[in-house]
Length: 298
Figure 1 (cartoon, rainbow, N blue to C red):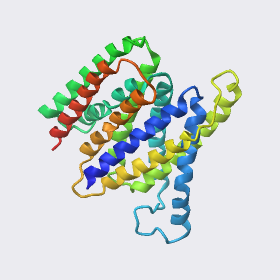
Figure 2 (cartoon, rainbow, N blue to C red):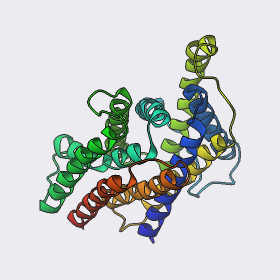
Figure 3 (cartoon, rainbow, N blue to C red):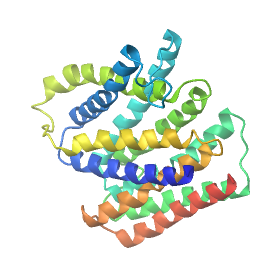
Figure 4 (tube, rainbow, N blue to C red):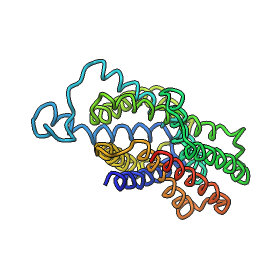
């Protein structure tokens, strides 16, 4: 059951990435990100109000408990890490093809595993090392595919932004491992969305708004709403999958990265991106790497 939920979450994450790409095409990044955080916060607002002022959600998975100031600070730190990852990822996705950013983002579990190796003292087995090596090889081949489209990995700042998004995303995953050892799921999911919205508001008002006429204009797309909806549902299913006693966070996080299949297909069908034949090989290596990571965690 939990594995099926993980695949469902992966599919929804793929839909989230596709709607994000549509929303960012020729659009201002900061307003799109602000509305994403705002809508996500509004989605969770009823759960906060019902939890704080009624007993309707008591004892359910949707209950938002009262927590200490220290807990709010810990979740705020997570919000800073996640928002940094999203900032880098949004700007990169606006300027790069989905068939480039998708496979790069799919290597995030590798970075997480390496982080767990260095920070938590975990050790990789043979299968996991094979998975890491295959993922690194796919990144190298992907750089060759990118050159055919005029994207030089070593000189392209948007590739650098994608890598920074992966690194901060992996840091968020490692921090999740620390947080989820003692905190309630809804506490983390609800408040980090709210805090991101509060952080994005001054960025929108003081950094983007005064310069809005000198940069890419903002155009409202209903896909911006779908970004938040797909992400909130995908994350909720992900957290729900982790409530099963036999679930394995390492496998669930890797399965979620199979969303690259959705983004790759969307890049081919809807955005008519180039050099798909060579990128299929890169994608295959990424997925093969994920399989070996899965085998190594059984």
